[in-house]
Amino acid sequence: MTPVARWLGQVTYEPTWRAMQRLTDERGPQTADEIWFLEHPSVYTLGLAGREEHVLAAGDIPVVRIDRGGQVTYHGPGQLVVYPLVDIRRLGLGVRALVTAMESAIVDCVAECGVAAYPRAEAPGVYVAGRKLASIGLRIRRGSSYHGLALNVAMDLEPFKRIDPCGYAGLEVVDLQRLGSPLTTAVVARKLLPHLARTLQLPELPVWSEAPPQSA
Image (cartoon, rainbow, N blue to C red; front, top):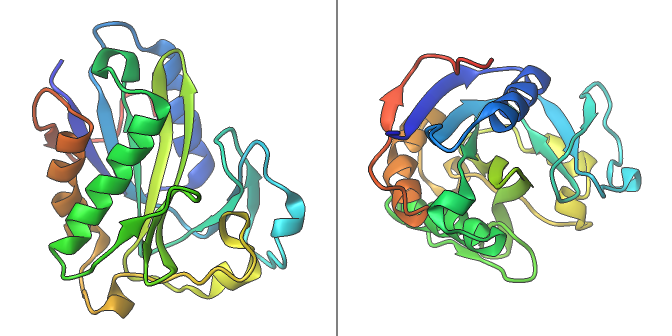
């Protein structure tokens, strides 16, 4: 049951979401944990309790209602999206501990890039000087997690102005490039993996694979 980390490149949102659901529904006690690293083409996603009034002017960007917690967020090229598909019961993690693990991994990873970031207890995610650098949204089903985190690396931030990010009107958003770190999403994925493995308390560092998930 060696964990697996997968780099999927840029993949469309809905088929990837459905693949996460299938893996979660089909997994058993011996199914290995997986962490998917990827980018999505431009899309807004609205969580289960998300309010449509937080989508101010979607324009030509599609809005997809999905089954995670949280409000509305934006995914697009240049943003690293990470989906930890892990058995939290087997790892002994509660939901709050899982969120904290992801936040801590991001903070430690971007510190290596010279960026001082921090979480906020009242608003999940990671921030730099009040601007949001990464968002988090999860779904727990059958004792396992899917969905995950989105870390802004080097992207067009304009689409965030068309929503209230994570339900907060006027919340400013930033990416690593604007903070002086000229890295690609693929490079940041490699840097983030060992931090996630440590904070998620995975028994060993995941094997890196560039093959698509079998359930996709």
